[in-house]
Amino acid sequence: TPIIIIIAQDKQIQRILQEMSSPNNTTVNYEDPQQREIAELRRKLALLEAQLPSPPESSPLPPESPAAGQESSSQQPDLEASPQPPASPSSELQTNNSGKDLRSIFLEAALGWTPELWKHVQNHNGSKAAFFFFLFVVDLADAVFDVVLALQDMYAGSDGSGNLGMLLLFMTILGRVLSGVYGLAVAKNPPDDDDAFAFFAIMEMGVFFLEDGAAILVLAKSTGSPSIIEGISTYLTVTCGLIYILYFVKEIIDEWVAGRVSGDCGRVWTLLLTVLPLGGAIFLLYILATEVIFAQDDDPPLSGELEVAAFVVYSITAFFVGGSAMYVFCDRASR
Image 1: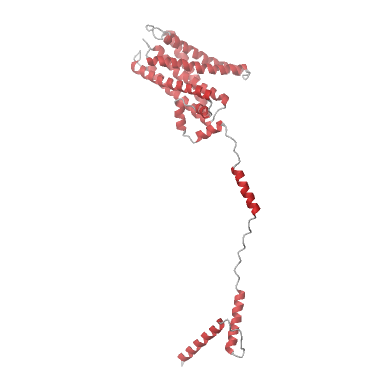
Image 2: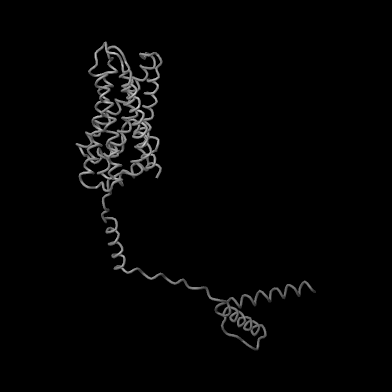
């Protein structure tokens, strides 16, 4: 029957597969048709296995020579231990100020704390640091007392208008702006050591003609016995004027004597730069001495032709000297 035939064929196929998988069955009887068929199947299986591609062998990495390893390890400490050249003070100043907010630099310089002072403190330069610190204290105290003097004149002025008090307050704010712009200029473009104090003196000279010139007018127009505020403001103004103006004139004379000022144009320009601040400072300090320091309580305030001359000299020096200083530092700070 068909079912018996199928069962018989299935058993025959299972027996053939068992004989093919048997490792001990190596002898082939070619008279037996089943064994011939098994041998033919084995031959075809061997041919198929031979045609299949063999998997690629992974090539081992070449071992690192111990000499090369020692050489690379010996070079590493040399790179780490190589000394770096020391940075210059100006580059250190630029690095310290690069991460600092420009607004804080401006505010510190407006109060008188300049980057030049901080540089000398960092370098442990005792004499210059002490001198700059003295100038910082004088400059800050002078600005504070100028503001107080302006408010005092605005609320209790001799003429009752308070116009000179408002002028002094405005010029004090303008002088603080000049000082702050100076701080930005030297922070972004640090000067050489030879020019550091010259730039500082130019800034303070401009501040003197802006702030202290207006303070001299307020003090000269006051009547009666001077108050404590007026007395302190008077001597702070004298200190600032003598220090900065005389130093600047000394630098101009040194340049002239050393022969670094040549040509007619250079001599005329240097003469103007010398005469204008020196003559203006001498005249304003003369007004301060005669009308305030050595004046009696019953003496009249500044008036007449001397008053007109004082206002004219103050206007010229504040515009040219103070304006020139503002232009120089604004241009340097914008680079």
